[in-house]
Image (tube, rainbow, N blue to C red; front, top):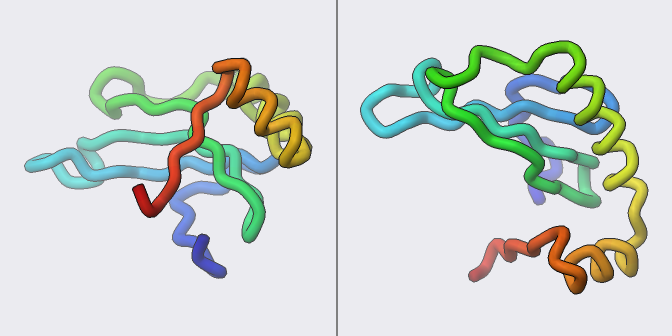
Length: 96
């Protein structure tokens, strides 16, 4: 992980929003991804959507995701491994 990540929007409580460009549409017409993030420790993809399908999160969804971020970012490595083994999470490795 980079030491100083480029974060589009820090929504607080370990939840960040990243904009991704859609081919031919640029960032403003592209995708949004929500990531549970703690610098130098962990990044967990939570949700993604096309900007054309959904403008933004409503307050209830944002509050739910912030609670989930706090929970997941507090997991130990062993707890993450158990979630992966149970099929509730998937690991994506940068070098694969």
